[in-house]
Image (cartoon, rainbow, N blue to C red):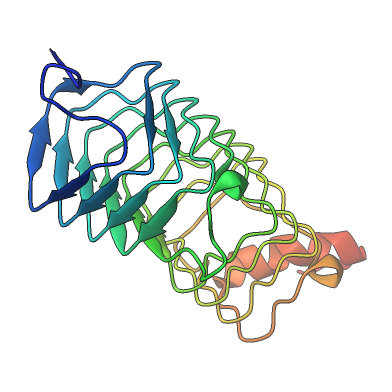
Length: 200
């Protein structure tokens, strides 16, 4: 695996339409750089700090971001495919304009999404164990095929979100905004358990 230093990647630089493969960013810090229409494949960002950066129209494939930090970094129309994204505090991102991203086949377990706007994002075929979506805005988010085991939804805006093909999720309908959200018939029955309702 190549070092990011060997490739001349550094802080306060602009990179456009470049491809990065098998680059080692482990534990490194990159500040105030811009990446536009770039592709990252099999790169290791674990425990890295990517601060005050901008990733726009970028694609990440088979990358490892476990325990990475993104303080004040912006992600605009980015896509993550088959990436490992364990234990990330996404609330550190600069998400004042919202955070519309696509996660496909990723592991987002133990992530923190509190108080950020993920509206219109796609979380497809993902493993999302014990994630925290407290007070986040998830309007029109698609969770198709994702496993949400023990993930926390509290005071979360789930309006028009789509859970029909998701599984292992549970939350109290009284504590979240759910108008227009879509669920499978069986999942609705499970959610009604919180009301003590018996359905034959």
